[in-house]
Image (tube, rainbow, N blue to C red; front, side, top):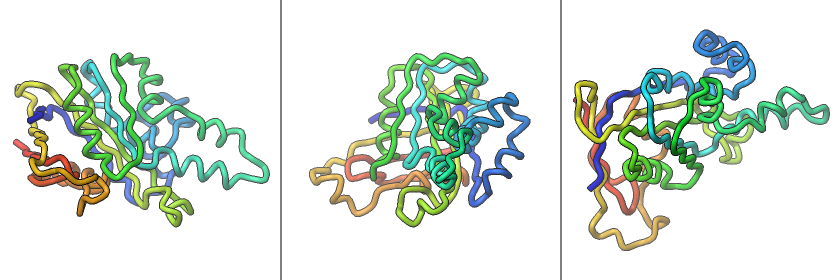
Length: 225
């Protein structure tokens, strides 16, 4: 059994909000250059990480199924006269790296995870196996445009961040526990259902508890204080 306590939670349900509105909404949160040049996912992740980054962390685990898909699509849409600005944005480092560079904050361990049917299970497992006393687990998606038709982008925008600690303390808001499923002998592709990053976000956003499988091999218990 693997267990951690949630000491901080941030969420942003951007839904179908357009990129310009997201930039305007979060402009005052960051430095002016970051607000102009970051990707949309960088803005969303930076917003939900604000409170969690008030304290040091030993590790960050970042999960996104599609990453900066909208940013890439916007650059491709600028052809046959490609935009230098959109090109610069499309080749930025990941959302978390953008935030940490802007804040000039170091981190000992950084684990970026992308794609895959069992992304949530892999992200939770990575966070709970980390030797760091305090781990930040974050992730999210940009709302895609035409890439959604090809299943290469999310149909909604969102971001989440949790600070996970080894022990219960005065800041504890909840508890995460992962347990292996005893009879998990089949392949992951044979699993009848796996929790998506969108479904995981909805649990966090609503503050709902959960007890059940999240992949063919792992069972999650999520409790809130």
